[in-house]
Image 1 (cartoon, rainbow, N blue to C red):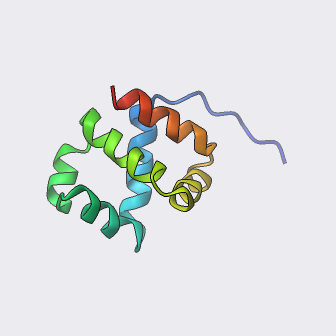
Image 2 (cartoon, helix red, strand yellow):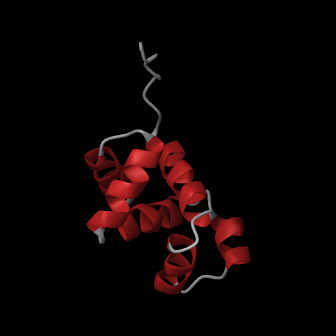
Length: 90
């Protein structure tokens, strides 16, 4: 099977995709809210802010099994998520 290469996406778009996956996950969604102290409405309202996107990716990098799970779901290497977290966190 030939996989079509996607153009490289920017860090914010990748983080938003990760957030969408996390929000739809029964375990990760509530844990993200608990760890960030945000409620769902605040997270939705602030989802495009670089600090929030960095927090989402930092949440993943702090727990390797979650990082690997989301990376596989998004079809990206885990290091891509970690690198994006570092760039967004500046």
